[in-house]
Image (cartoon, rainbow, N blue to C red; front, side, top):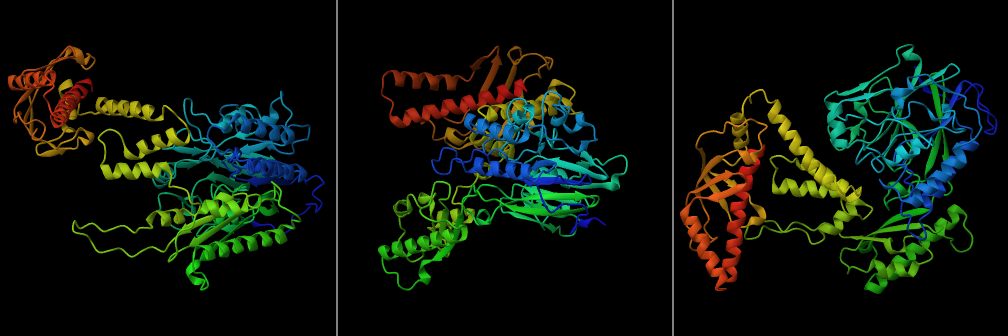
Length: 637
């Protein structure tokens, strides 16, 4: 059975010596977030400084290659400054004449479909330290062509980019088969996929694991992924459970989770081990980010392994504490609270000096991060900005030291309308639940709003929220328009491929089935007023035009009965509206409607209409346009 290796035969204790021919040595790191907060005067270089330390450790330890678990970049479209600094680091540590002691024996055209070759075998480049990487949720492929910033590094031969799923609804994972002497490694990788979608793919058993055709039991199976981690509940759709992964795996490197748990732990109910390297730079002021950060050197020999952890020394110190003001009996007014909290911060700074052996004043590189989560129940809320000004030059995040919250208030009795009043401090507690004090993701906000409003007939709430998220967070300016066009095309294909549809009349019937039925309310949103369609029928002969004929060449009559337009115009009554469409010219045949419009136009010319009358006319015109466009859309489909 494969397991943790306590002593490696032939492994030298001195890391300056060359590794043995039978041991594969891999430096493992995830979530480097290059470019995070790059415009900050104090913290702008944190991500680059620590990433260079990681590459320096890899070079000094003479590892065979570096394995990155996603989120190499913090932004989906990194700035030129970030790309330049990243390229300089890779150029400094990856290029060279150092010999490569392993070989890739799998089909490289499958492993690397864009380059068809591992970078160190390219005759135009001298690669001394290979890097293999998947993408994360921050640097995932988007936009035209589905490219990411990792593709740029891949084309420049700095990294070997793999694990990019072409179809997230049917995933096939092909391993990179690596051999060094008698040791064989099967490296699987899967870049970040939206958790709900990947969870659904796993549940439907649409993830295929391709294994080596020969001697598959002799391979050490290593899998790297970048997803939310759930150790127990495989029914939680916003994460991937360890129970979903197959039994034949030996080690899983889990990216995306920022808490550093570098020591491998055995999976619950499975035989493999899980290593969670965590992030190399603190991107939020949360508990998980305050844990000391490490990278690991994974050594594999035959069917055994061990993990050697290396503490990162360039990571900015970070400490956080919880404070409950009501538990301190000597506090009376706001000044007492300010003095007490200042003493807390000063004590934390002294502890940091002792732990990190810092003498003298803090420099830009050693200035720490401090976070106090303060429960101020029973006290007046103090100003975080005013408090932070006293620690300028001492704390790197002086304007974010305090995270204020209060205990959740009990729900009040229902009011006259039957609605329960919300706690006054709901927003403070929402920020506390996020730990970092940031607002919820834009995707969750949009999806929640759409679920409250109601489901749309063609557009899907979740995918619409994804499109808005790409528009906002990944600056994809065409994301919403692209999804809209794609949804319309998919609906058209559904109608064309439906075996029950054999003529234009069937399409008309299918489209009409999605329109409001008798007695169904139409939610017109911003159009104003309540419009209720009580009856709808199609009169006249059915069109005989072919499906390819343009809508402007078709004639169609539609009668809408009992349309309640009350409250829109004082001189209009419920009537029959017959709409005739011919060569994009809409003629309203109802004489009473024409008379009403003429009367309103004359009143407008004489400027005798009141403000309420103007608003009512706008509403009536909007509703008629809504009805006309609805029928026009049906014809076009």
